[in-house]
Length: 488
Ligand SMILES: NC(=O)c1ccc[n+]([C@@H]2O[C@H](COP(=O)([O-])OP(=O)(O)OC[C@H]3O[C@@H](n4cnc5c(N)ncnc54)[C@H](O)[C@@H]3O)[C@@H](O)[C@H]2O)c1
Image (cartoon, rainbow, N blue to C red; front, side, top):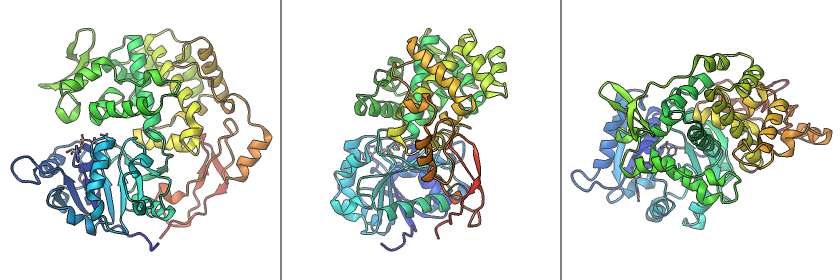
């Protein structure tokens, strides 16, 4: 296959993600066509034109400069499918419904150039399932490319091959994502919600569960789960508003529908209050109201007890802030677990269940623990992923606490921690892991680490690069240096 050159891209769907992905392509001076359904009245391109105009109002800004808006060509499926013939890459970003996506693939199939890549930005639908509707000849050029919201700013792009995706196609797309769009790529297996959302959405579900258990307000939980934990200001509930509550419910439903044997399955449900918000069209930022809402100059938050909005004034208690500011992660986690303060108990429970879930599912969703940490850092904007947080807090001690809480019935699931998380690595498996990887295996987890070449994280770096490689646990392997060259 000749080397992939991506000069022109079509984005299908001008919603929250599609419009912003198009903006980011325009920022990188890629010729971009943005499609949506034809408008029911007025200009047939009305839906897309409105979406492009709306981009100028979003914060943080999707465009590097306002002039970039003019570089996007608006299009609709009734009039402009011919424009697809010149595109080297087609990114589908329509609503999260398998039947709608498949119907659109049926419609565009005849217009896709023989060399072009078709990639879905689905948050977690099966890539192999989506491929079913495509002709066999397109399977090698089909995959998932999962950007995170907001796509200009979130560093992660997950690449999800289907069973027949050509390796060269993936490598070519990875190079484009890294060098042209400045993304960090993590390869994910085709399991529901891939890596970032499987772990990230579980973390939200666990936060929902523990919010209900503890009786804390949504604003109070956001005060606790944002910058104090090294996470974005939008924390948990405001992030859900930014993503879109309907999209969030779809992603939760994907987990409910496709993971019947997951030991945490009973928690994969949008709570009644969330479904009620969706039913009345309060979908978050895109509709101006959701869990939070602006009222005049004030921000108000949904209060479940009052069944109404109230001023969002919830804060983290100074006693808990003092614990979270402890620079020694081992001491911090010991204090969180020992504290009787409801906010501290809430935080320990959220961390415990996140660690438990991540460890239980690691082998089935990712190649390495490092991929999970990178997906969560880059996709959710956390400063540390679950495994490196656990590692820093003292792997063995935290594993013992989790095991104790499982036995005591405090954890969300009684599923045991996997053996590798509880027992020290055996010499043989450690040797095997070391042989397959230039980075020594983590002494505590023995998780095997497939080294990502440095150019993947620092695309502008001169090659070859001598940056030390990092292990899954965050340790730097000074003895091993990356000698990988960035592809031309
Ligand atoms: N919102 C997020 O934070 C986020 C993040 C990553 C990935 N995603 C994924 O990106 C995709 C789009 O999500 P979004 O948040 O932009 O959704 P959205 O609701 O904002 O936009 C969906 C777009 O799809 C179009 N559409 C609806 N039905 C259609 C149909 N039958 N045929 C063709 N077009 C149709 C709509 O006109 C709309 O422009 C989904 O697969 C979603 O899971 C969303």
